[in-house]
Length: 417
Ligand code: ATP
Ligand code: MG
Picture (cartoon, rainbow, N blue to C red):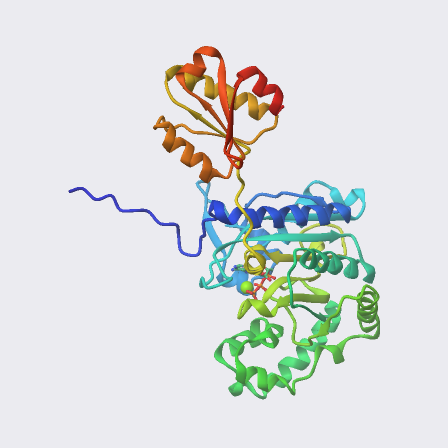
C-alpha cells in the first residue's frame, strides 16, 4: 500500500473557510463604507518589502523587528521581509510616488501581515489588519478624527464592551528626558526586574512599562511617569485631544503605561480593547508618528494612524451571530447529453441577467439532483431532461411552495431578467 502524506498549512498560518467568509465580507464592506464616508482613500502596497524598510521604520530594538520578522534572501541575494505591519509600507509608497506633494493624505489599507510569534487564540503568524494613516496632519483634531473613525466602525459592527485607552508619549525631547529618568530609577532596582525587562533596560526601556510580568508591574507603580515629563505644549496638546473625544462622547481611560510596541510613536498613543477577548484583548492600536516620514527619507510630515486586528474583530463578531452562507437564486438540474449542453448555456444566460445560479454538474439521477437543489437554499430549480431539451423547454420548480410549471427556455429568460 502506498501512502501519500497529507500536507498541512504551516503553524500559525490559517485557512479561512467558506462558512467564515460571510462575517469577513460584512466586516470589510462596513469598513469600506466608513472610510468612504470620511473621505479616506484606499492604498495597496506589496506584501514583500526590502528588510531595511522595517529595520529603519519600526526600529531594530522592537520585538517585531528583533524577533518576529519573516526575513529571507531572494534569488538575487537581496534581503526581503514579509510585511509585519502596514504603516512603513504606506509611508514608503507615499514618499516614492510623491503623494505628499499633493497635500495631506487620508489613506486606508487592508491585508495580511506576518509575524513569527507563538500561535495562540487571537495570535497567528499570518493575520490580517485594516489600518488608517493620516499623513500631513498635525492638529490635535486629526487625532480625534482618526480615533473616532475606528470607534464608530467598531460600534457600527456591533462590538460591545469596548474601552479606549489613551496616553501621550510627548515629543521626542520629552521622551529622551523621561527615558533618562526611568533608566536612572530602574537601574537602582535592576535586580527586581524580570530578565526580559533587564534586557530592555539598555535597548528599549520604555517598553518595560508595558511588561506583562506582575512583579515588574508592581514595581512600576512608584516609577516616575511619562505624564510628569511632558513639556507644557505636549501636555496642552494632549488635553485638546481629550476635549475633542469628550465632545464626540467617546469615553476613554488614561493609561500612563500605554507605550505600544513600535518605536516611531510620539504624542497620542491609544488602544481599543474588548473584555470579551481574554488575554489578547487589543482589537485596535495606533498613535501619532511625527518622525517616521522623515526617517524614511521624506520631508518632515506629521502623521497619525491605527491598525485593527481583523481576526480578533471576527472573534467578537462571531459571538454576535454567525452570518448565513450565500444561497443561489436558481439551481439548475439536467440529465442527458442534449439537456446538459442546454443547461450550461442557460445558466450562463441567467447569470448575465444578474441571477445567482448553481449548475449541478453531477449527471446523477433527477431525484438526487433535486435533493441538492433543496439543500442549496435556492428559491427556484430549473429542470431540463431530454424531453424538455428536444422541445426547447424547461420545468421551473418553486422550491418553497413545491409547485412546478413547464415553460419555454426563452420565456424563462425574460421572466428572470
Ligand atoms: P500585541 O500586544 O497583541 O502583540 P501589537 O502591539 O503587537 O499587539 P500592533 O502592532 O499594534 O499589535 O497591531 C495592531 C493590531 O493587530 C493588534 O491590536 C491586534 O489586534 C492585531 N495583531 C497584532 N499581532 C497579531 C497577531 N500575531 N495575530 C493576530 N492579530 C494580531
Ligand atoms: Mg505584538
